[in-house]
Image 1: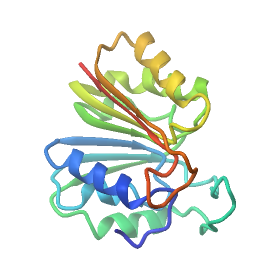
Image 2: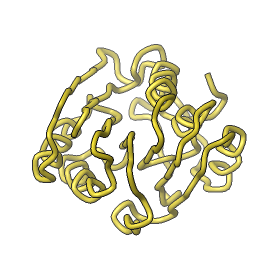
Image 3: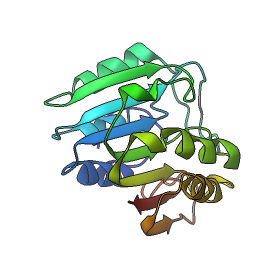
Length: 189
């Protein structure tokens, strides 16, 4: 769908674009080169926030895809093409060092940060103060151990109410024709 290297699929990009089409704000943790970020922005009008350190080079788990080195400038160039009517804020730091007072009323939270139980739970707790009264939380790579349980733990510890949840796992890991490594989607209020 977009010619940007990343560990995602067209199905995830289309889903993000559709979800964001009637939302006002988007927060993405783990932006790499922008493959998911541009799909949230494309044709939409969001207050968009992106968090990444752009220090850790990532590669596919199965080793079948070789990605370029992470690069903040490449990320900026990629999302500039899809800026449109969106406002964009970039935080170049550890996800737990972001000044969350600068982020508010998040409608869509896309988490693609460290996928272990502890960090996933801690991320929900850390950013929960930025969420709108109703917010869609999307956790990438739900097939990985710790993602779903960590997300649920963070939601519970943040005293958020789950209105709807759906775990979408894939049979084949890193399937570019499916939901890559799965998603966990939660609507909270």
